[in-house]
Length: 257
Image (cartoon, rainbow, N blue to C red):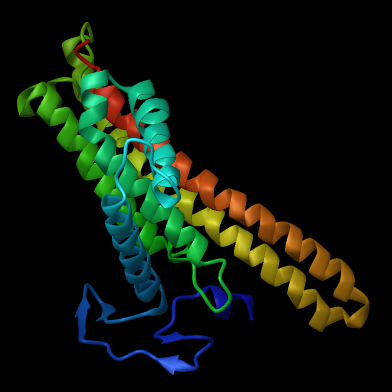
């Protein structure tokens, strides 16, 4: 029962609405791949739509002293710029990458919160989604490093200064493992934390059907507690993903300072 609720499906509202598709189906390396609309895809499209609407509303209400949603968004943007970007990289670079960090933060946050709505789904609880987000962060990290040091300088920094020539090949392998370990950590951390919270809630509610009516009060009470905790985790995981991405960028753009 828990696995069924956590898996991505080509339907919405508990299989009440079946989505069209798949639009494309093929086999690659013995693996059958289908491309089409799924529950998580709809949630991501909804998150993108909500962010676009939010951006339009904020853009129309730009003022010296913003109010309402403009004030809220400004607080988040300033926090990301001053407490995340500027705290992990030089000021000039911080302004350059703030827009990417804001996009990452808000998209992950909205996806996390949509999963807490009844009949919703947490797209960030899907490994394919978090892998895509981590891949986007990986590309930006490498772009930042190459832009700062140049392509040759970027690959040259894989061998720290002062390393003996005979140890250089081993250091390149170690550094390359670190390069790919960073996005892997971003991917798995976000996926595991978002999946675990929903699994715990479903487990607590499932005790009612396994044990009986005696478990109604404790199961619901603990379920509500975990649900409230999940709201905090939604913000926390968006912050952690954004912060680590900024730190990884900062390690490269500050390399020559």
